[in-house]
Image (cartoon, rainbow, N blue to C red; front, side, top):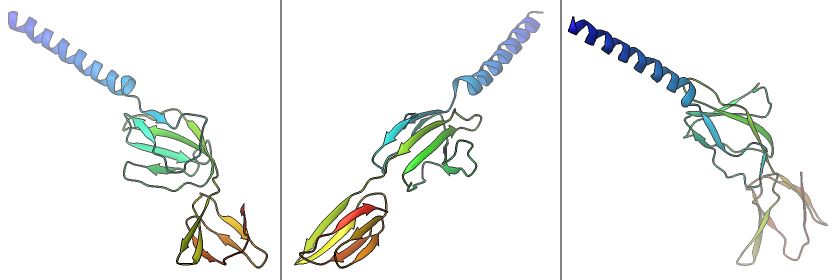
Length: 157
Protein backbone atom coordinates (compact mmCIF):
# COMPACT_ATOMS: atom_id res chain seq x y z
CA UNK A 1 0.00 0.00 0.00
CA UNK A 2 2.79 2.38 0.91
CA UNK A 3 4.52 1.71 -2.44
CA UNK A 4 1.38 2.67 -4.36
CA UNK A 5 1.09 5.99 -2.55
CA UNK A 6 4.77 6.75 -3.20
CA UNK A 7 4.35 5.72 -6.84
CA UNK A 8 1.32 7.99 -7.26
CA UNK A 9 3.14 10.91 -5.62
CA UNK A 10 6.09 10.34 -7.93
CA UNK A 11 3.81 10.28 -11.00
CA UNK A 12 2.14 13.51 -9.87
CA UNK A 13 5.56 15.09 -9.38
CA UNK A 14 6.68 13.94 -12.84
CA UNK A 15 3.46 15.28 -14.39
CA UNK A 16 3.92 18.67 -12.72
CA UNK A 17 7.55 18.77 -13.83
CA UNK A 18 6.56 18.12 -17.46
CA UNK A 19 3.78 20.74 -17.34
CA UNK A 20 6.08 23.41 -15.85
CA UNK A 21 8.82 22.55 -18.34
CA UNK A 22 6.40 23.04 -21.23
CA UNK A 23 5.10 26.29 -19.73
CA UNK A 24 8.69 27.53 -19.39
CA UNK A 25 9.50 26.70 -23.01
CA UNK A 26 6.43 28.44 -24.37
CA UNK A 27 5.95 31.41 -22.05
CA UNK A 28 9.17 32.23 -20.20
CA UNK A 29 11.63 31.50 -22.99
CA UNK A 30 10.35 34.17 -25.37
CA UNK A 31 12.75 35.33 -28.08
CA UNK A 32 13.58 38.97 -27.41
CA UNK A 33 14.96 41.61 -29.80
CA UNK A 34 17.21 43.98 -27.83
CA UNK A 35 19.08 46.20 -30.32
CA UNK A 36 18.31 48.19 -32.40
CA UNK A 37 15.35 49.53 -30.46
CA UNK A 38 12.06 49.78 -32.32
CA UNK A 39 11.78 53.13 -34.11
CA UNK A 40 15.50 53.83 -33.75
CA UNK A 41 17.51 55.69 -36.39
CA UNK A 42 21.00 54.31 -36.95
CA UNK A 43 23.72 56.42 -38.58
CA UNK A 44 26.45 53.77 -38.70
CA UNK A 45 25.73 50.83 -41.03
CA UNK A 46 28.29 48.70 -39.17
CA UNK A 47 26.13 47.58 -36.25
CA UNK A 48 25.28 44.26 -34.62
CA UNK A 49 21.81 42.92 -33.81
CA UNK A 50 21.47 42.05 -30.13
CA UNK A 51 18.99 39.28 -29.27
CA UNK A 52 18.07 37.05 -26.36
CA UNK A 53 16.64 33.50 -26.36
CA UNK A 54 16.66 33.40 -30.16
CA UNK A 55 18.48 31.56 -32.92
CA UNK A 56 17.93 33.87 -35.87
CA UNK A 57 17.01 37.38 -36.91
CA UNK A 58 14.38 37.78 -39.62
CA UNK A 59 14.82 41.04 -41.54
CA UNK A 60 12.66 42.65 -44.24
CA UNK A 61 12.01 45.93 -46.01
CA UNK A 62 8.24 45.46 -45.61
CA UNK A 63 6.08 44.87 -42.56
CA UNK A 64 4.60 41.64 -43.95
CA UNK A 65 8.04 40.04 -44.45
CA UNK A 66 7.25 39.19 -48.08
CA UNK A 67 10.93 38.65 -48.93
CA UNK A 68 12.66 38.04 -45.59
CA UNK A 69 16.39 37.79 -45.03
CA UNK A 70 17.26 35.17 -42.41
CA UNK A 71 20.34 36.03 -40.34
CA UNK A 72 22.14 33.69 -37.96
CA UNK A 73 25.17 34.50 -35.78
CA UNK A 74 27.63 33.81 -38.62
CA UNK A 75 25.80 35.96 -41.20
CA UNK A 76 27.17 39.33 -42.28
CA UNK A 77 25.05 41.56 -44.46
CA UNK A 78 25.46 45.04 -45.93
CA UNK A 79 22.26 47.03 -45.76
CA UNK A 80 21.34 49.97 -47.94
CA UNK A 81 19.88 53.04 -46.24
CA UNK A 82 16.15 52.75 -45.58
CA UNK A 83 13.49 51.47 -43.19
CA UNK A 84 13.74 47.85 -42.03
CA UNK A 85 11.45 45.57 -40.05
CA UNK A 86 12.86 42.79 -37.92
CA UNK A 87 11.92 40.09 -35.47
CA UNK A 88 13.70 37.20 -33.80
CA UNK A 89 12.85 33.52 -33.65
CA UNK A 90 13.78 30.56 -31.50
CA UNK A 91 12.78 26.95 -32.10
CA UNK A 92 9.23 27.54 -30.78
CA UNK A 93 8.18 31.18 -31.20
CA UNK A 94 8.75 34.49 -32.95
CA UNK A 95 8.95 37.88 -31.26
CA UNK A 96 6.88 40.89 -32.14
CA UNK A 97 7.90 43.09 -35.08
CA UNK A 98 10.33 45.99 -34.56
CA UNK A 99 11.60 48.55 -37.04
CA UNK A 100 14.63 50.78 -37.49
CA UNK A 101 15.87 53.30 -40.03
CA UNK A 102 19.36 53.13 -41.46
CA UNK A 103 20.39 56.66 -42.43
CA UNK A 104 22.28 57.40 -45.58
CA UNK A 105 25.80 58.62 -44.92
CA UNK A 106 27.80 60.66 -47.42
CA UNK A 107 31.52 60.56 -46.71
CA UNK A 108 34.61 61.07 -48.86
CA UNK A 109 38.24 60.61 -47.87
CA UNK A 110 41.14 62.22 -49.72
CA UNK A 111 44.34 60.20 -49.89
CA UNK A 112 47.62 61.72 -51.08
CA UNK A 113 50.52 59.38 -51.85
CA UNK A 114 53.66 60.80 -53.46
CA UNK A 115 51.78 63.54 -55.29
CA UNK A 116 48.95 61.28 -56.51
CA UNK A 117 45.51 62.12 -55.17
CA UNK A 118 42.67 59.64 -54.74
CA UNK A 119 39.21 59.93 -53.28
CA UNK A 120 37.47 57.08 -51.47
CA UNK A 121 33.72 56.83 -50.97
CA UNK A 122 33.64 55.86 -47.31
CA UNK A 123 29.89 56.43 -46.90
CA UNK A 124 27.08 53.97 -47.45
CA UNK A 125 25.55 55.40 -50.66
CA UNK A 126 26.82 55.87 -54.21
CA UNK A 127 27.95 59.40 -55.00
CA UNK A 128 27.70 61.54 -58.12
CA UNK A 129 31.05 63.37 -58.35
CA UNK A 130 31.42 66.33 -60.71
CA UNK A 131 34.13 68.80 -61.60
CA UNK A 132 34.51 71.36 -64.38
CA UNK A 133 36.06 68.68 -66.60
CA UNK A 134 34.31 65.41 -65.73
CA UNK A 135 31.51 63.64 -63.91
CA UNK A 136 31.40 60.09 -62.57
CA UNK A 137 29.65 57.81 -60.12
CA UNK A 138 31.72 56.63 -57.18
CA UNK A 139 30.25 53.51 -55.54
CA UNK A 140 30.55 52.63 -51.88
CA UNK A 141 34.18 51.84 -50.97
CA UNK A 142 35.39 52.65 -54.49
CA UNK A 143 38.61 54.58 -55.06
CA UNK A 144 39.31 56.97 -57.95
CA UNK A 145 42.39 58.96 -58.89
CA UNK A 146 41.68 62.66 -59.28
CA UNK A 147 43.53 65.61 -60.74
CA UNK A 148 45.54 67.94 -58.56
CA UNK A 149 44.25 71.53 -58.18
CA UNK A 150 40.74 70.57 -59.29
CA UNK A 151 37.50 71.33 -57.45
CA UNK A 152 35.07 68.44 -57.08
CA UNK A 153 31.50 68.34 -55.84
CA UNK A 154 29.85 65.22 -54.43
CA UNK A 155 26.12 64.56 -54.15
CA UNK A 156 24.20 61.49 -53.11
CA UNK A 157 23.13 59.61 -56.22
